[in-house]
Image 1 (cartoon, rainbow, N blue to C red):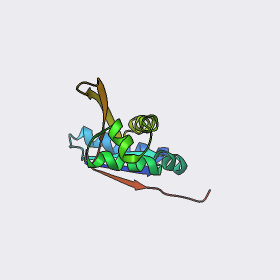
Image 2: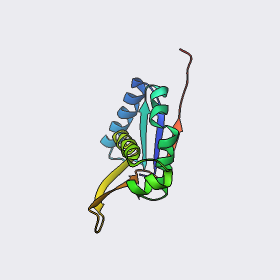
Image 3: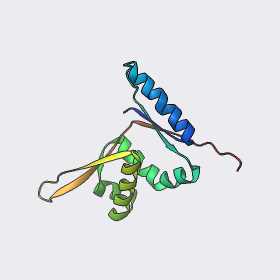
Image 4: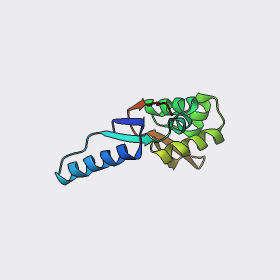
Length: 126
């Protein structure tokens, strides 16, 4: 994946994108290297994309890193990093997998799912 668009939107927008994607698939067209992640509530989007999580994503976008490396580079404890990685995995912004750590068991390697993340928020009067 080369790009992720994180945006605010409503259910109608989601279904419009899904319908367009289904029509494209029916025609046998190739999907681009772009994924859209929508949040109905801008507040929730900004909670997920906190400053600390954005810094974490920037680190792994440069190159995959272990939880220990992220903890050291970001000056945060391992537990907080692990929780943030778990949340970012659930929403689809990072992936992680266990790999051998010779002489020390296993370690968790965190990878970005895209080289670029674009964030768009639309705020409206209630």
